[in-house]
Image (tube, rainbow, N blue to C red; front, side, top):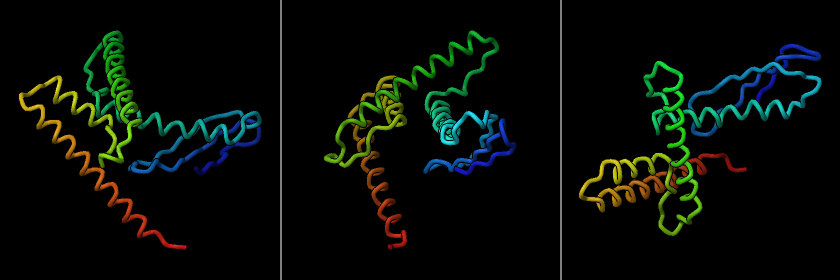
Length: 164
């Protein structure tokens, strides 16, 4: 993470441009005013780095539970909508964290993700069909396919890295 003190001494603006997390497309730029005499650089960098986890959480909320799909004009209706969508995201995240505790090396599947749990909830509970076994079989096939793709990707990346 590159840091530049734009104004010194005493009070200054810290300009932080952290590296984007792996798998992220966008890079960002964060700037904050801070009391440079009383704050350690490591503490300022930690605060600037938290931005990425917040951005990832909002992106997940928008794509999985429709946080950006509200069309409201009053604060109370916006507040209700936001509360319900973030509660739905919390339930999906807890389910994904619970599934991550299980051992998936035996089955050869990737762990259940928030996206897969939302899709299965939608397919099996919200819009149930007569052929539940087909949906569950398709989910297993998809997770096995993703696990194979992940292994192949990591193997290829490791073979392209220069050897010491």
